[in-house]
Image (tube, rainbow, N blue to C red):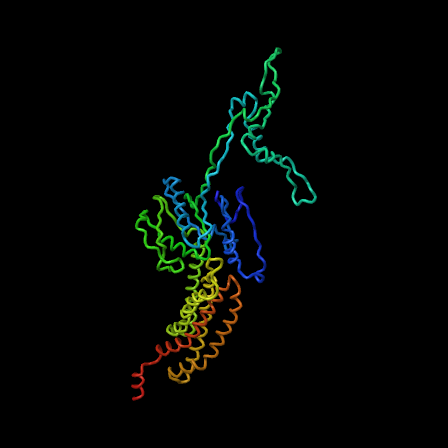
Length: 483
């Protein structure tokens, strides 16, 4: 069967090989790139019913897989139709580029052999069904008879009674096994009357036969609803991209005759231009959801919570500045440095993907805007406010000494440029070190790009906005002079 659970990989049909990587200083690639290379190297060996999976131990909360689709059925939909729906999802994902290691909780049919005892014959031989079961279990599965206390062993060694593998390969091997009848059950009549017959030894073949069936499928439920999970690993594409493309091609009715023209290759698609024109649909009575499990769900939760955190941070900064300056306009001018960081962050992450070797083993290995980058963005709000604060403070002092707004603004730019650049520079240098860390480099990149853009723009935007807001119109000034 193809059942796999990431955090409990065990079963008679599964084997596991664990790789421990050398120290990251001693290898050219990060662990994710090593995984991409391994997938490419091991792909040819997934043949003849053997399935090879390259699994990364999840660095975050354990997820079923990177991409998880949940296929649900309406209450009265037959199970076979739900299985067809899961296969439709599998087929469509298989045609999607950079989607690998497709799997589902559907199980391949496995044969099951059951020994059916013919009760009448068994009774005539004085053999109980329990005895037959025990004989079969002992021969096939084995039974622990005792334990050996070996001083060299960590745990006591079990001594297992079991037939030699060569003697339990075919049905006939088990039918040859003999079972002893219970004493005192079967009687024989002699001249003296009824006496206990000797315990007979009967071969199993005389007492019953094997029937072949199939093993029952495992049923999965989530929130009391029948579900089939379809899972996949992704080679370098974010889950959201794949879901957007596959969803855009979904049609409620299977009208595939009207298949649209194929879009360009996957890397030229955008979120405004989703789908590959590879249309597909689900059988009636079934439905599909992408955001119940997997990395996409965690990503959405994290960014939702961080977005709220960002909002709270902005509100808190505004409240503090408003209390400090007694002016809503001034507080907002100081805060204008914050949106300017985004001008640096978004193009910055885009630019990072244009440089360097961003392909590993034929799969993309992009620099993504991660959760830690979002933390960096929130931290920036507090850092860049300081730059505009230095300017506004100075303009205020100059105006208090009787300078005109225009004069004060120009002076502030000239005098305060060096401290602003110095504070920005120290922050940059501090963050350069963090770019080497695989998890937190997003945070460092966000802060670096954000600070560069914000500082450059702050030196222009804050003075200009201040001048526009607080400078009295020239006309009213002239009136004042003429009086």
